[in-house]
Image 1 (tube, rainbow, N blue to C red):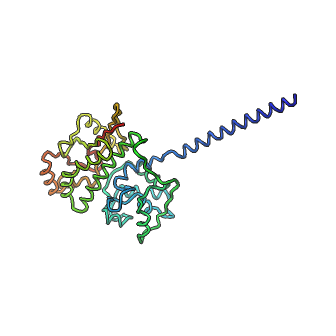
Image 2: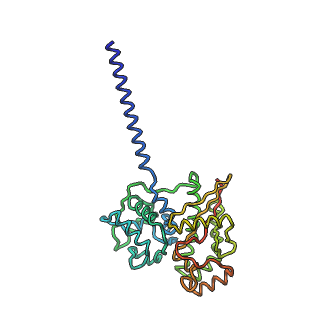
Image 3: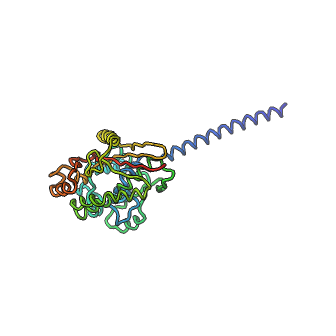
Length: 330
């Protein structure tokens, strides 16, 4: 009898111990999952910043400094997260040469074009930058260390360096964004380089000759059909159809409310249709602003000569200029 009682007590003890151990393990797994959830600022940075501040472009092909350079110039050993976020917000609200902290970048690329973003978008991006290691070009460390008269820019990374994944395994949203932003970067690199080196008139000619071939070349690269369409096209061939006009109207409401736009995705049999807004910044207004204001008279004459039916003027900063319409196979 005593033996049976001992066995019973031992069994109960083991059962309770196992249950407690399993419960503890389950809680720890949840903690790990929570810790590994992606910071929203990472995707916002890739979507809004990497077109100009690419982590992979070479020194020669850049149109702006990489994000890691911005982090290192803005963060010192004494900088708090709150101070860093406030500094980034201040710069985004009014980019100008007098307040610049990156004099070499301003000299090489010019002052960043003024672009309006939701305050929360910049908060999330800056929060992510402060706490995480962010991807850097291969040449960056040697370049940064060789510069003189620059603060030490303490890096406060707490996670492993980001890595890009191949298209396979990406969500339809991420694939569409990759194709749209990659094409935008290629067009922007060439267009902004032309403006900086040769001026607005040369940029108008560049768009007339090169914009279509460059877009088509990116369609080949991504194995997708990539188009830019507008309700106020410069080239009549870019006129939006009825469905595209509806999407443009939807994106206009989102941007007017100072919200972060989300892509529109249509899943149709074996094909995905992806739509995303094209918005204006201050540099865009050199060709798409108001005549005799942001758009000077000589540039406007050139535009009317090349595009007699032009409708793509009168824009202000942070307005929907058109949309990306991208189709790709699943």
